[in-house]
Length: 363
Image (cartoon, rainbow, N blue to C red; front, side, top):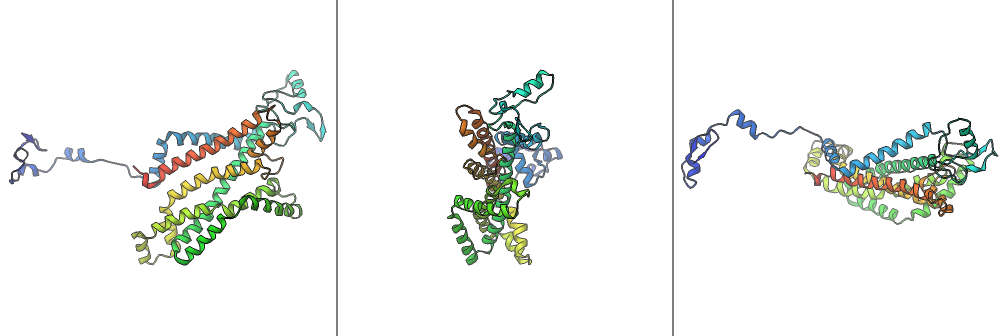
């Protein structure tokens, strides 16, 4: 004999093929029985759900910690570090004082520094040694990481703005406009980026000599400015295609038709309905664009098309280290490790953001 929720014996369960209803089965449940069936879940937004899933991803959290340490280092270390990235330690007022500062190994001091230590003074150590010009290598690596991260950040912002606007307009309007805009994208895809960077560098070099001499922009140099221009001219096409494909599938949804029926403008539909529902694609594409831009900048700096000397970048540091790769191998290994950590962490973080914010993977 079985019992129903009220604890009474029910004939309905003992005779499953009977057509007689058991009235005891229709007795209202008590408040305690109702509470047992209620599954409470705190209300949360799209961002809160995504962040909860992201925190459960141990690899992504580890990458966030690594990036946070590197970002804090490149921001705050130059504030208290006693050496600058362009300071040649053995030269004072343009005169060579001590040549022992060149090519120092890690935690090794120059002759004058040893004399100061012998006199009881404190001398800050050279953690990564010095380069062939007698400059502290640690602070140059820090500045190089700062340049690489800045390039990745600003390049991703440029790609995000241009790609999102272009792709959303093309996908929403459709028809001949979409066909024409996508043919422009195909043409841009066929342009050789390296050739354009070299040509822009030559042109901007002349402009810097005649117009922008002595300005802050000259610190970066024509090569770096040309890299930013190429990112703005060429690198947004991938983002535009992704956004266009997402908009093409979303604009046929019922909520878009409802917005049109109440007289919503095209710009409002894109801003308030289509782009917010494409946020997962935008976040993932932007996160994966940063390491691509950093790697491109490092590669171009390695070839001598990056920042102008004496401003360092990780790619230029690795390129300069080739001159003494057998004698001072660590000078090549250190910037390579920084590039490896930054690019790998950003790629894995992008994968974690995809798993966390892609609604198709929810659950």
